[in-house]
Length: 346
Image (cartoon, rainbow, N blue to C red):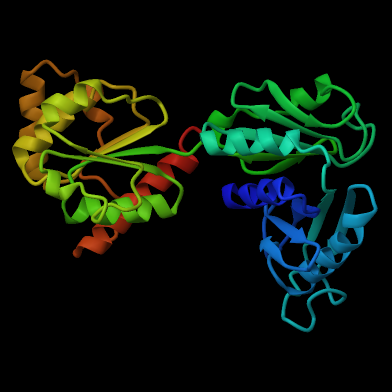
């Protein structure tokens, strides 16, 4: 989404007309889920995808006809023998698509704010009114709500109604896209911040994988040669310094995931001591059961309470019989994704 919004704002800054298409509702089996989007340019090129096939081609055709003259439009596709028979996409589901033309010099403040919210990574929710009157506002009105549920932008002629607000689900529950009382709610979930303590082979592999699934990664190691841009090109921050100097002041909040994968028992214990009483979303440490027991016993002697020890994922990672470094990294990132996407969901 970040790239598509960047492309949209770049086109608008260059004085080009475009149409943004947004999958606002799906039912049954469909090639893409609600929230997928595609940008269509006047020359027929595109950024993003709605799943390919004849549905995407039809949406693009309609978008091109609306770019020069036409209001936003809602399109509905039933994926049966009328769509997809020639390319195997007889899914049997239904897709509803918003096509929003944006002409050169047109109003784009909604998309500018959406881009700011998405870039900040704290989470926001779009609400698209699909049925006039259901939410007390006109059809195809659009509203953008920040993480705190406050409306920060709208592409509509009137304020958000109480009914529309009543169906807004907290982002802390990490909801998927949903439709309630004729309104499509499309959450942009907060990006997790991942702190990796240890720049060795496991930390390096975890960083690459985690960045590819939308974590913002920071790596810390006391050896400067292990936290170079060459080794960690996907990290937003690379910190060389002693664990006892860096971790006490490193910002950790409820959106921060922390993993301890240093090169030895002593460094692992140091890192865990500094992180275990911080308000992280996830805290995990690599190691054998024997090493973990030894470290936990030491931390008990340091006064760390049992309830804090109990929240540590140790050994970290989902059990998949990992043996190689890539397999270990996969198991760790899988557990991070599970914690991010499933923990606390009602």
